[in-house]
Figure 1 (cartoon, each protein chain N blue to C red):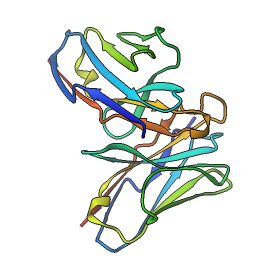
Figure 2 (cartoon, rainbow over the protein chains, first blue to last red; figure 1 turned 120 degrees about the vertical axis):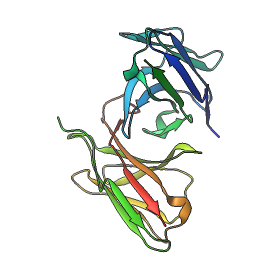
Figure 3 (spheres, rainbow over the protein chains, first blue to last red; figure 1 turned 135 degrees about the vertical axis):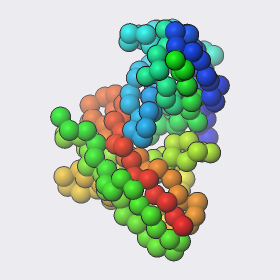
Figure 4 (cartoon, rainbow over the protein chains, first blue to last red; figure 1 turned 45 degrees about the horizontal axis):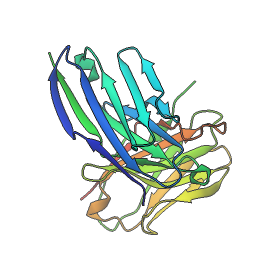
Length: 113
Length: 114
């Protein structure tokens, strides 16, 4: 059974801090790893990674995938209160899985002013 | 382009009742997936529909069912509700073009079973 484990489950930091969120996975026929941000209800897409070692970056957020060690990290630099949210990691299996994703439990990030 | 729309936003039901939730995908998206989100379990896959056919199914009991219409709108139904069905039900759509695992989520329907 596919499995995604995120750590830590919750994190409280001050504005300006840098945070690293972790995601490890076990999945049959790995295809992709995705990061989502969930502030209220609707998760919003951040990154999708398919190749190992390639860093994806968008402003203060970046992510890297290690397919050999089966994990990914999401970095947020110079955190702001607006970064407070649950960050979800998800993994897609082979093409027969369609758009089915296996999600981790999420990391609840709280950024205090 | 309008996003994924789910209705209703909130529902309160009692045990034993049934409920129907609705989802309109992003225009042009033919794949619609449903997920259940609870505090202890995270997001769990229910099923996926593509072109009116169920393409994938998660490990949920038969009380959970869904369908998709020719305009790609989807509904999911839960019969004989149990307390444990209280959850946020999220619908997501994706493009036909690869990568189709890039999902766009709606704001969900918060279901409370009393």
